[in-house]
Amino acid sequence: MKTAAIDRSLVSPECDRYPQFTEPLQLGVMASGSGGNFESLLEAIAAGKLHARINALIYNNPGAKVAARAQRWGIPAILLNHRDYKKRRQEFDAAIVETLKEHGVQWVIMAGWMRIVTEIILSAFPNRVINIHPSLLPSFRGIRGIEDALEARVKITGCTVHLADLEVDTGPILVQAAVPVLPDDTPETLHARIQIQEHRILPQAIALAAQQYSAL
Image (cartoon, rainbow, N blue to C red; front, side, top):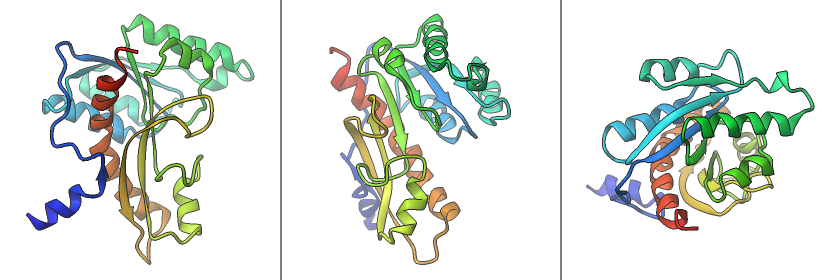
């Protein structure tokens, strides 16, 4: 029991129960890599923790393992390769919006999406684009969050779920979880421990965002 209490104190805000909704949240997930957070969301939904449906997965790398995870769960997986658009970034984001709308998506979850979004996506889903980042924002923004934390020799880092805006990793914070940095940590070992907390707080943050922002 003591260990559990300490573990809970690492997450802010603490939440033993997720907010529940009459109708399931209609989610669309955007991912670029292996899809660990994507699958953790599916597991939270299957366990009844998060009252939601994932209507579609958009991925931008042809070899991304997240596509296979989607196939196993029966989730439509749509490849939109940003390289096909070259410098036509707005067209790329417009294609994303069109795809998400076609699948009835109301909330967009960037779960390891390694692209900066534009106003096109943010205006199509105002206050409904959620990102997860492997640091305690506002510290260590950007793609090197884990490496920068190690180079800074901080003792505590973690992960943050926040609403996306036009800047990188600066939107309103929803939930954070702290993770200690161990003396012998490498980027890989620290990332693995951060991911455990990411899987824990992402579904919680989605529920809290829906509770706070659905009426806006």
